[in-house]
Image 1 (cartoon, rainbow, N blue to C red):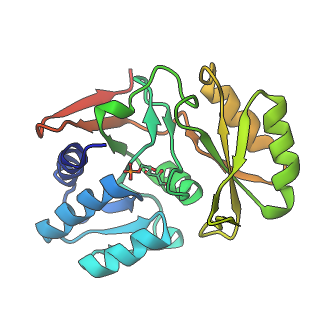
Image 2: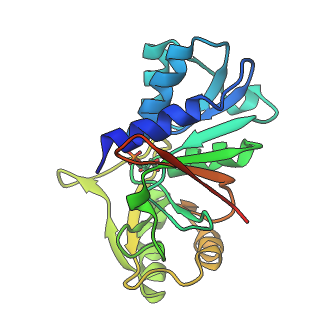
Length: 224
Ligand code: 5RP
């Protein structure tokens, strides 16, 4: 995994920001570079953070934060991804922040993904599992429903304890051997299961991706 590439992507995204913009602040190590670069610019912006960790980091860096109910919409959301396809379907939620990440991405007029070229895949869900955020009561039936679809499912835990999300839920990581054939259909089906609050498939949200390479160059991918 390349930190130079993540840094290049994060810094390129910070250049897209204009004074007065209302932003979405993603979560993760690539977003960390975006936040640092944005703070260095010292311009007047504010954003909705997608996790408690990002909210704390914004406070440390002096970046103003907003709640979703304080804005009608966002000009620009910037977030990382665990995997993406060339038509900008994403897997997100490696850091467990998928629900707020999806809410914030959907609020934004422009959603820019920052990543490295090694995260581009032909099919989602094989090398990196699809995270699913579930209310604890529904974890067992949702697991069985995913297994019936052919997913190999693990509950996410840390040191033997279920990981609890910022929203008080648990996470299932669902891998599809060979990859997911139709991610939009799977996203819709999984999010219809009672007790699921979000899947980590983001199939119709990203407008562009900035892919940072180790040598500092950044390549842009756009939908269409
Ligand atoms: C967190 C996410 C992150 O954006 C994703 O895991 C990528 O993280 P990183 O930039 O650290 O590789 O979805 O829930």
